[in-house]
Image (cartoon, rainbow, N blue to C red; front, side, top):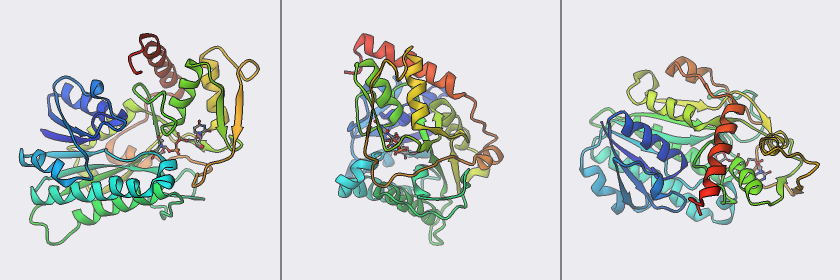
Length: 321
Ligand code: UD1
């Protein structure tokens, strides 16, 4: 297949690119390199520098004839969505609308979209099934949800002259190798690993009893790639999490433990809770199981060990500085 991956130099996108290239697909990546890294795009994929919020930068890629688009590009920071709401809106919503307009114009038959568990907002049932009403509590959750609705509403348009099959993955906290270790706006696990590697204190926002559902990158890639030609996933919104909660306090202890440390010999600070935060988070993954025959296969301890191994090596070689 000819596959375009937006955000394909980023953490999740580059892992998707690597897998698809190894399966023999022709992969084109577009990335603005805001957080994505050229070095993470696999040899064998074509990288084009460009921004999804500029439709002109996407146009020529669609002209080459695409079989599928994996739309992963996005502004990912909940904090930045509050401090820089227009960038968040442009990247997440306008960027998705641009991708959709081009999918329609070029009759691309397949689109997979990177949605987020932040669309649910506060106080849903736990674990949270996909039919839970969405009431996002961060600007970021709003833009991810708006974009998701654009995706599905476009696929259902009665005036399309072709079948546009779409699937959205509401991803939980994805972690693993290539996660940023030095970006305070990126995922907490990478931030804590970076803290340990650089001899910095760990900072926990709020009381640390908020929980997240951590899912290993390889499990996420399995689901996306398995869905590509799986007709049962057409039109579906699917949670991708492990189905297990981990508190941020417990996460800090796991990361400290992986370095042979504990709170007794490592500074752990508390700072005020961030706005727009969900409290308890746990995915219901029955739909992913039923539709994709998917299982989260990597236990947290194994995924953490692999990520720590990668992070230590990265720090030693200085390859990500
Ligand atoms: C993350 C992703 C978001 C994705 C969502 C899906 C990032 C930046 N955000 O949001 O794109 O859609 O998962 O689940 O990757 N925390 C600390 N100390 C720190 C950093 C964070 O205590 O130094 C806490 C936060 O307050 C929060 C938790 O850790 O309670 C998780 O934060 P974070 O990794 O930033 O992700 P989410 O907001 O869950």
